[in-house]
Image (cartoon, rainbow, N blue to C red; front, side, top):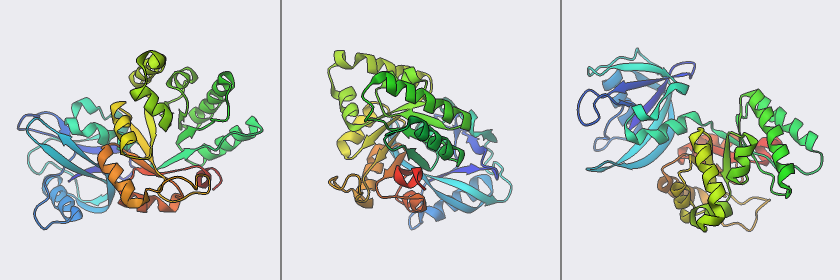
Length: 322
């Protein structure tokens, strides 16, 4: 168990430095091993009290993953601590510091923490746009309204636009709107087009996921190169997943996060196989990356999704029309 402790404004994160052992000098989030008979909450509360002298008031699951070191594999259960009492200090002689969220450098942390930092930087809502049918200006105006309402992670989904120049033009306009509002835009298209658009990342649908991971290298060379360029720029790489195979492909392509579903039956895809929360949780545990839950979910379902290991909720209609 470990806790990512945020200051009252949610801008700075409490981190400690190891003073002994193989990773001496590396940063980590405070925590420790679960003792027999302890619940997850009890362990987290005990460890944070013993290590940094604080008492948890409000916390929720952030991400759960497995990581293999040379000698063993560990099961990491990371919680986001949003409120606490007491003054943080290194109770066991370890140096501690408060670092701005944007300054967290994964290379200075224990190796298992890269995904934790990714999860910490992602919101709990992922807005997926509907198809931009009809008036493009009306579509862009609605997008502007949505990001002004605080939706700061957006996927532009425009599969009905077959002309690449038209899609590129729309993506660039959407990118400008999101940038002005401080939101990040991912384009559901080829990595090459996402790169040309200046978007903050690319979202790979199932077909593109298979093509890039399993397709002939020659036919996918430009997109694979673009994917590497996006990654080098710090852009986000995301994927849509419905089963274990697609989760594994997203890991092969080193995606930053994924969307898994449908959790419930939806009006738009009534024929799709339903995961349910049990199936969703199984994919979360296999993925070892942040996963948004999709399918028949609304903003009110976010706390429930957190309980099943989700980063949050992705939605089209509930977020676009709500």
